[in-house]
Structures are given as structure tokens and as C-alpha cells.
Length: 172
Image 1 (cartoon, rainbow, N blue to C red):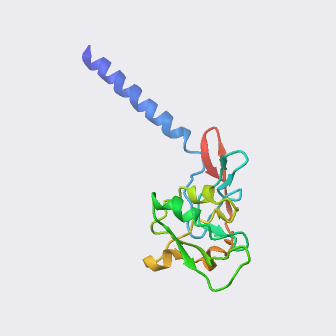
Image 2 (cartoon, one colour; image 1 turned 135 degrees about the vertical axis):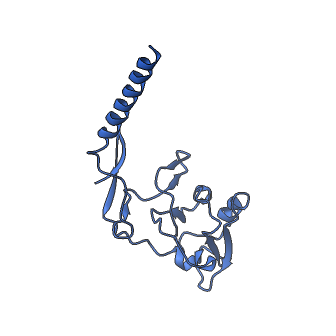
Image 3 (cartoon, rainbow, N blue to C red; image 1 turned 45 degrees about the vertical axis):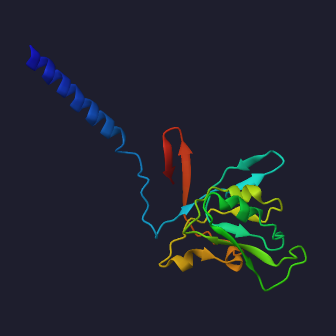
């Protein structure tokens, strides 16, 4: 009697496993052949809306710095002090009329945790986070982005777009 109940339990378990596996046979896999195919995120990246007091959803990637808006107030660096200490204010050679101190943020992506608090702290909308997620480097010094490097807008040449439905994320 015990052997038949044990057999039916194991048989039903095998049938459930085959059933579960067969559901996923016809679904396209999420695996990409990187770097031949790259993700293309929809949207502008993570931003902060101070009127509503909330962050606007988006991917938290490399920062972009708008030099004409930065006043050198250091709020981004002060915010980052207790978390990652990834932002350092550095002297810049060119002078901007709104930035009398001639200092701008420099970000060390080896230390950055991509929390987005520096974007939230910027009252002049000078700092945003883009969808650029390719930040690999061979040395630690190449992970330090100067204000001039942060001003360069990322080039999006990705061909794969992420789609999300009730079953999860997949690419088209």
C-alpha cells in the first residue's frame, strides 16, 4: 500500500515538472548576445521632480552634467558623503557666469552605488542619470569621470527593446 502511494506521488511530481517545463518551451529567452545586441531602454533615465517631491522612474546609469546649469553648490557631493563618497568637486578651467567658484562634480563609478540621491539633491537640474549602463574599465582611474566626460550625452545604438507584461520581462 505504501509503495503505490509513493509511486503515484513521484509520478504526479514528474508530470508536474514536465508540465511546468513545457510551458516555457515556446517563450523567447531573455538572454542576449552581448555586445552584438544591446538593450535599448525607453525613457530619459532617472530624474527628480521637486514640485511633486518624487523621483521619476527610469534606469539609473551614468550621470550627465549640464555645465550651463551647475552653480558649484556642492549639494550633490554633500549628499554622497555619507553613502558612497563617489562625488568630488574639482576645479575647472573654463568659467561660467552662474558658477563663480569654478568647481564641478567629478564622479568615481568605482565607488558609486547608483542611488540617485545626488540627482534628487541638485536644485538647479544640472545632474541627471542616463540609461547608459556600459561603464566597464580596465583600471580604476578610467572609472573616474571628469566634468567634461559627464557632459557628453550617451550614444544609444541598442537594438533590443525591453517589454514587460503580466508574465515578466522579455525582449522583442
